[in-house]
Length: 226
Image (cartoon, rainbow, N blue to C red; front, side, top):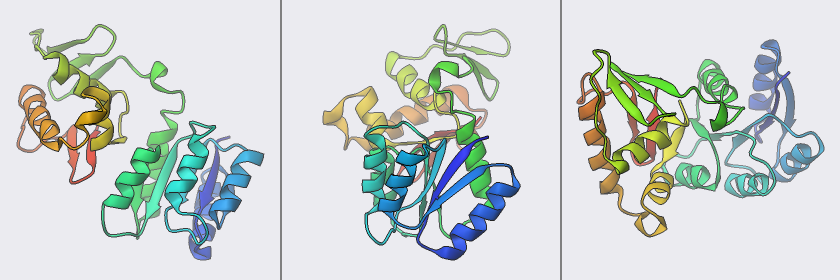
């Protein structure tokens, strides 16, 4: 049974999530502070963490850093903050996804299902994925249309695409993409990402102006939607 640690200082949210998650056969632990969350995670390591950023004692980003010091457990952030800076900081600290408050329980459950499908890590990812009328094979680094025609990608186009496809459904921050593909000195060059995503959409999406698979999260990053 998947163990989920829910961290939030609002009692009604803790109660609602505990009831809904247990009804769907998850094992649930709860914590109302950052210190309690770190202690609970150490005593009973969870399979997934749902974490509110606005905790009364420790900022949620610091809790993420504390967890990332010893575990790669998936973390879904809950945030009631209007701006994107805190969410980007959380993603850069190691969070896997975010949900903005107020949120619907079904939306959160969908994000949890998407993350738990990735619990095995990238090594267990399906090597062939679909984008429109194309099959992308991560094993042999090839892209083919349904008619068998090969689509040529430049090395950087492929690197950007692979980073997204290796984490289906997950939001990958702009900073992480720039660091992984170009290097840490390029972390502010967001125009690079806009250009390369536009190129990939023109090559792979059925309607590049209305992409269905290579999705922009404005000001935050990009997501591959299977």
